[in-house]
Image 1: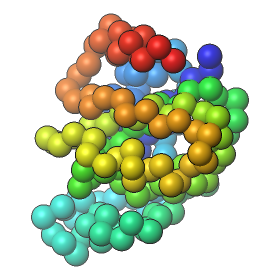
Image 2 (image 1 turned 90 degrees about the vertical axis):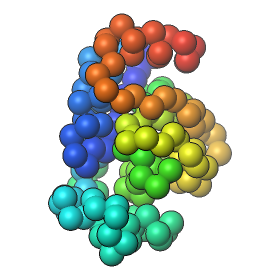
Image 3 (image 1 turned 180 degrees about the horizontal axis):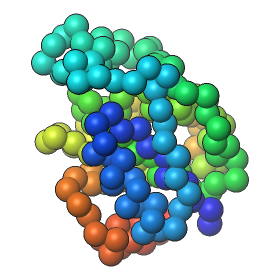
Length: 159
């Protein structure tokens, strides 16, 4: 089974978890990068006029990503990581999913969060992939999960 860990990290928290996960399960890794990086002001969820707030209010928002130099075709499973924003995935994740063909792929979500769960993340991403793609609500991976914890979790998924 060929596996990819793809992730978006606005502040570095999700990146640390993604790096650790990829190493633990011996997967390739790919960073989903916005064409315009997010600043601290952009990420201020308490400001309804901040970039992240504006993007998340508009479900059709698709922040531009740096041209994707990854091809998901050879992968059977894609672990897709992101920070939880407003109980869903940031809309840049939809941009990534819509930029590739995920037909017949298993997409396992993992996220970092300041306190909320996945909420409606799966529902918010389902329309961005073909019906043959399977989106699996994975796990919130806060803190510093060990390689053993990550490997155990992936094994429990029985992919």
